[in-house]
Structure formats: structure tokens, C-alpha cells
Length: 114
Length: 113
Image (cartoon, rainbow over all chains, first blue to last red; front, side, top):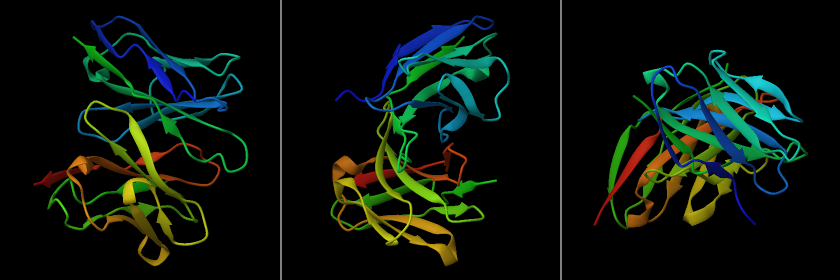
């Protein structure tokens, strides 16, 4: 059973560019959440997608947007990149049904903005 | 709003010694609590979780945690630490219908041989 997968593993971008990160959830999961983890910090919640809709959003600007596809996979898009966007971006999947409280994390995408 | 405090930024223990990592949470009702571990350059692995019931929960790799409502704490323990336990440990809370996880800033565990 494949766990949560993310691509790419690493990415280097220049300020002002746009980036797209991808996530495939664990088999049987229908909900995807995205987190940003700056160096030396705990993960910060960006947003969550369920049934192809953004269900909940953290305190991130509109430059951060996402999408969920019918197969439950998800993309995170960041526009007009800033140096401060450099971080590890983590995708987590979960099941929306009863007892589906745990979130399982992927290995992350390391984004460096120069 | 929910929040998590991990008071210890860095802890060093000898291999074979016992371990306790502290976690305090803030939430108005009974929270869902989690401990995750992160090795360098890796994602987060779920160690254990508390939803309800028995306040002492067992997890993987020999870890356990105890939920104490009166102290708003969910401390992680292990009786005998192995060198492979060296990693960053995060406590997280999820409150009620809000499905997002709120994490603490983490505790870095170093194990000396």
C-alpha cells in the first residue's frame, strides 16, 4: 500500500516565479491538507481540500492556491514567490469518515527561492 | 484558538536512559492529540494519538503518552532510548470540527552513546 507521495522532491525557483507542487494521497483517503514548514519550525497549516473544494484555510495569502482532482490527488500553487516562501512543503492525507482523524504525511517538497 | 507549547527545544539523553518530552496544549474542549517524529530531511511519521478513553496511549517504537486534562498536557515517554530515536518530535492538536493540525515548535532529541 503506497503512502502519501509528493513531487518533486526538491525545487529551486527565483523570486517572482510561480511553482506547482503535487501530492497523491494514501489509498482510501479522500482529504488532502497542505502544510509549510520553515527551517527550525513546526508545520503551519495552509489549507485543506475535500470533494474538490477548499474546506479550510490557514493564515496564508491568496498567492497560495490549490486544487483537488477527482482521483483525490492535489496541487499546491504559489505565485509571485518571495524569499520567505523557502520551506519544506508537506502534504497530508486523511479519510473523512468516522474515526478518520489521523493525517498521514508525505516526505515533502523542499522549495528554495533565490 | 488552539495552540501547542513544547517547552524543550533540545534534549540530550544517553542511550538506554528514559525519556520524557513535554507538550502543553490550549483548547476549550477535549482535543485530539498527536505525536509525530521527523528524521532529518524527512516527512512526519505518526507515533501515537489520543481521541478519547484511556488516558495512557501506546504508540509505535515503544513510545507512550499520557493525557492529563487537569494539566492540559500530553507528554511523550519512552523507558529506554535507542540511538535511532534521535530526531525531531512534534506534538499536535486538532480541535473539534476544525480538521487542521496545530503543531508545536518541536523538540530535537539527541542520543549519546
